[in-house]
Image (tube, rainbow, N blue to C red; front, side, top):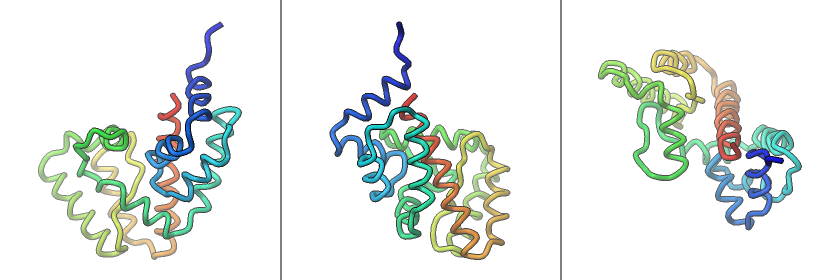
Length: 171
């Protein structure tokens, strides 16, 4: 009987030393309190249970924790060159902007600057499966949000990214 690779990966995660498990969680979402909460809730009986705990914790993050996590992400269109797991995930998530022409890159850079001037932090969006024009339109549309609305949107985008990365971690 073959063991399900997800079950095997989850068993490995459940058995990791706390520091190693926390490092894995921080790769998914660089919010230390959330990472510690995820580690403390082990062992998880299945992937659905882990994702449910992760989702609930991400929804409870204070804005200071969200802001800390945002700061660890690259700007849209500025994919990192590093060899870390997080860098590889960011490159994969931003694959839709990889082949953009100079005009599109310039427009995205301008949208990033306008967003940062407006809200005081970088534009965070779950870019996975989305192209340059869609991401640019999202940045421009979100400039019209008030601060409270935008904070909710950002937290939801962070949650989407973290859950996607958790799924990748265990598959």
